[in-house]
Image (cartoon, rainbow, N blue to C red):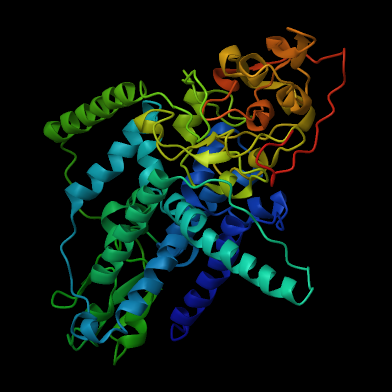
Length: 525
């Protein structure tokens, strides 16, 4: 088998996978059709598994092909398909170009941290079994990169677009349109940045240490790659024990002294094949080798994992009591506290959504009205970073199902538009003491004008004034009323999320006629 070009082929394939994945995560113009988005994200491992658990279709079978590829060729997912893996390779490449890092640009064999690796694997799995997705949320490589792209790279793209739009407009060229970011979430951004910097630091210092110690996908695929058909092997007869391959192994899995390759940690980068001065190291077909292993169970480990899960569950229940307070600048009198935040239509319930969503922020990037925003403690501690509807930033478009079409995990199930129009994700609550009709004795009605189902309608009040009233049976919780309400800092009308989504009645009195809201106006009424 000719192996001299394997590294170049791997790099080309990595770029082919990386660029489209990044583009769909930073696309703010809706240029990519949702069907194409699903195709681009087809091979992402954990999202594919979660989607198959929610509903098994062809588009959710990507993880099966990843398993097959791993059995055949080893961890090619980690070296070729995973966007975070590509990001680490780029980081490592840059680090070796710095003069201060010249002496440390070579790697060395490191002993496998088996205990730490399996602890970091089983904790997310146990939490998922208990109904909490925070473990996968924080450690899934695709989701980490998704948040990095959405919260760090995407704003750079938008800034570049807006700068280009401004420059072209000065020449009376208006082919590029500016895009306004409606809100900035500092805590989710800080958490995303911290995780990104951690991965970058590890790749700067130790190559693929994250992939082989922290990443749950790397752990499970590493276990399978031990029995892969094609492997990196050292030909002892031809090996000079020069150690060049070990120094170029970014997985630190080649022990040149003992002439052994740890295939569970090898990510198939093929750097060793290119660096070997002889033909002492090869990538070739080889039958699985059975090794003795102990089946004994460490009871201390089991107790630690169970107690950790119980701990996180308890912490979640404590932090879930933290209520979201709406803050603005213009004074009104009655603070607003939500019992439940609002999860996206198609998520079925808050509990189900929290258990499956990995917070990759694909839906956040794709949402045309920017109503989907990363959460902090709105879902409780174990739902951190997962998307929620923020009606201060936007509203759920009556005629839109984009989030359900692009969700790669099945946390947001595909929903038909007509069904979505009757899906009650929450119910609007009216606070009379904040309404300017009551406090300032003036006309308003912005909430009613923008309600697509006319669940909010105006009734007689005082001196020929009319004031809002909410008919719960027609309300779908889209938040158009809350977004349009002009009162600050506390809204006169807000949406209380439903823990389990319900079905609203169709308003036959007045057909739903969604009103176009000017997103650029401060008070759209």
